[in-house]
Length: 329
Image 1 (cartoon, one colour):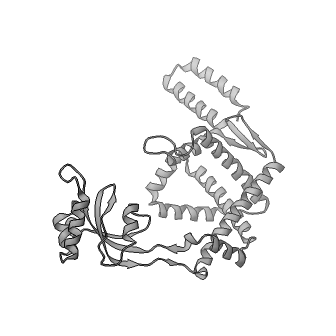
Image 2: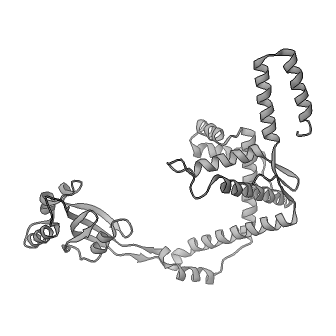
Image 3: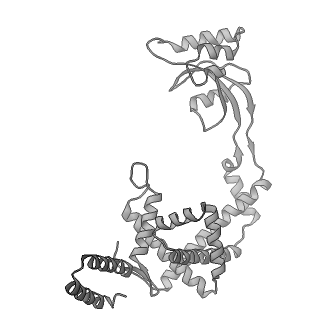
């Protein structure tokens, strides 16, 4: 394609002088730009070219998915992200070439079936077309990408089938990561809030006084409806609902999990103000047994091991093969 460019350029000159047609010139220039973009090579992997257009489409999509609401990229800048994208494209090409050398392939009917599954999962034909346009793909290039992904998946499955996880490894992981298998307890919580302001300079005193009245017979629900300054919960009797650790203000959590069912807490301070707390129900946390957790642990360890094996294979293929970069980065 690159070698034929001078011939195309000569043809353009003839058209320019013979016709003078602005629309034709514009169309030819557009075609030339497309040909040029498609012809620019950013890397060669064992003689197979990775083109700039494909790279830029992939990079553009990656930027979109990593864009924060303020318009900036998450975690990384464009140059660093671009390098990672190109490295991934090179790695995928190495893996596809290796897989094909191992007689790993997919049939056109399998690709078509996968297409139909993607359409159904993605919301139908219109959503599928919109997805292709967003990625800068047509159906042919999308089918090619899908075929490559399926080939890499089958290579990954082959590598996974050769790996195993021992009972000892599962036990070791379980014992060293107890937090992953612990279910936090919950409490059904209600509160009465007193805010500190010019009209209420001493909310602690008000809270302590109301606590005495509740303990003397005033119900918590009545007190919340009449005195709580949390407009969202006061008319509900102060009910906040079921909470578990890590989901609420730490000062409130600590006090709520320290009191008994039906007990009224002493005044608790938080950034919102001063609270009286009451729990109506408590569920204790539990630790999942190793027999229940073993399947999850085995999958996690296998996934990690397969990722390492894939990376090791790609690195070895790069060392044994030929990877040429265009100096884009």
